[in-house]
Image (cartoon, rainbow, N blue to C red; front, side):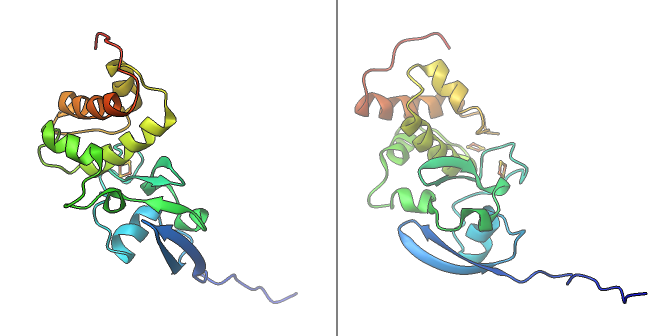
Length: 174
Ligand code: FES
Ligand code: FES
């Protein structure tokens, strides 16, 4: 009888490259490392938050090639070659992104834990171009939960930025 062999228990790390906030990173990652854990644990970009780690809260939202995704649900190896933007890449304390400035102006956070995800998601939502009413903003931002319940102010902030850069948002009942 032929001798039985077993596959190695620990697959090798896989080399990938990612452009994160404009900077190229060459990294060796295990196949099971999520993009969220890579950002937070390896690269120490802790602006991106881990809430549920199951795709249900939106706290981990980042932009991948301009599209918003839940980084807890994405394996880092699947994003090889992608351009990632996190909250750290959107603005700086001295030069806030318009949405960051609007969130401050509209008091659109309390604890702030959901805020990086809300802002990255709003950037993605605006580039999708499907929201033109408050109700549509709410609907298209519904994947981003806020345990502090700052929803009204969050929508105010997003609407404010949209009105600056796009045709006026239609009035609609919430
Ligand atoms: S941590 Fe990713 S959706 Fe909650
Ligand atoms: S501001 Fe606290 S969870 Fe949204």
